[in-house]
Image 1: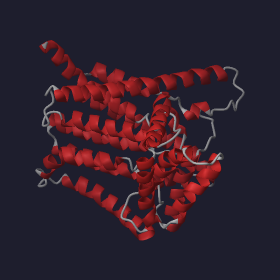
Image 2: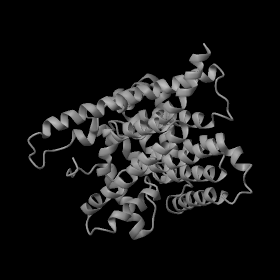
Image 3: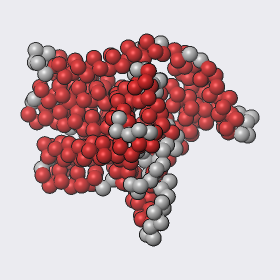
Image 4: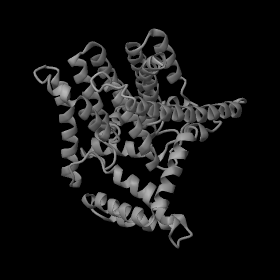
Length: 391
């Protein structure tokens, strides 16, 4: 599997972001500067296009090991060494995330930042550490430089932890958050200068317009050729200035959902079902480059395992969210004591929800959620245990 040389479209756009940053000092319209910088590190080690995808593997591997380590430390703080060991081992066995070590994608560096952030929040929960609260908030803010999906997660973070942080403004540790905020403001300023809007990325409007509105519109059109319809649909979007694209995509979405609500919902649910139940695309595309005799068997096993893991974690995550809602309705959650549980569950609910906006991503968008699902399970366990004893 490690000798595969597949390069997907998203990988190429991250490399393009790095090239824009290095040669023109410009931000990419879709890919934040964090991923552009991340892609320049392996690029500095090699001399050609392919070398970036070769040298990114050990960097990904280091961050993947970092994810496992921080997940272990988080569970250790929340539970005991046995739970921490098996939780980290379960996460380490997840095929879908492990194979992403081979690709220039944002999932691993993003999750690394998120887990450091959650570790900081966990340290604050257990030790009441303002320093670690600031570090946690800072890293979760920085995660938006790898995946714009963090925008709403940061909003949740500020709603849940904002008042606690404001009470500690006298602490020198506030500079961690200030530094992270300045980095984001710098990115947005560059985007404003280059494209016209004070924003992190334009990827949200493109994704909704291309993967959600367009398939729904095609289903009710007179076109028989999907590619021809897609070209005609996307051309007006790309022909508009960047400052008008988001408004245009929003207006088309509102129009489509007003006239064809069931079509839009149908596309969303199909996307959601696909992305939460399918195996790893990387494993699916793997070729027997070395003529290994047991390759087909190994590939089949890995495909089945990655598919099973995606379905199992999706089900566990949804059950975890429903249990959190149940505990909230039963008034078993206290805002002051259960901030971490609320933050994890709301963030997980959000990330699972937005998976349905993108089409045919297989397990890639869901695999970072596996870590959040494990942490949520650890947080819920004592709550459910005490509730069952009370009965």
